[in-house]
Image 1: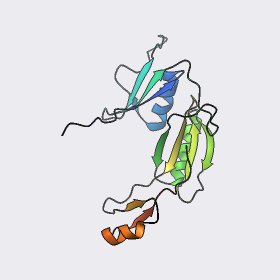
Image 2: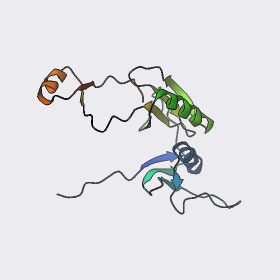
Image 3: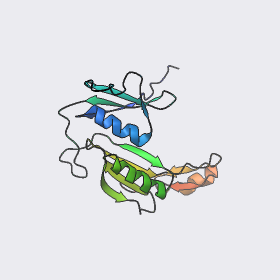
Image 4: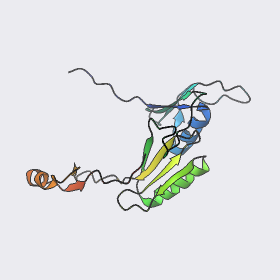
Length: 175
């Protein structure tokens, strides 16, 4: 069997790639790939491609300078989104804390769905206008398994597998 491609990173276009990279670096606790750090002192920053990595060196996000980028107008479709990022937090308290942190870093709140019982979330726009979501997604216990069922056939799955059913396709709407 041939090796399958794997996701290297997600690249985001921005009119100021350094400013957007700084926002996500601070929000997610990432660092620059060696050589992509901001220039020292008053040296001109002519970066047009930047990569953020985790401490172990795994690439997470890249930013490409695109002066003609128009910010999406979600929820309006005047300038549609082509993609958005979802970031998980473990509970509603962390959702509120990280939402406030994102706003302090330059994000703007688009929709507060933090009181949704099924999937609490916040929809924010990063400083370049790209919508992203912070949502509560507690990690399931490692020993527990379940089946995500999008329709009424769950009873058949339980009978066959003995695993509990989690309702599917009922999450709160987010971009």
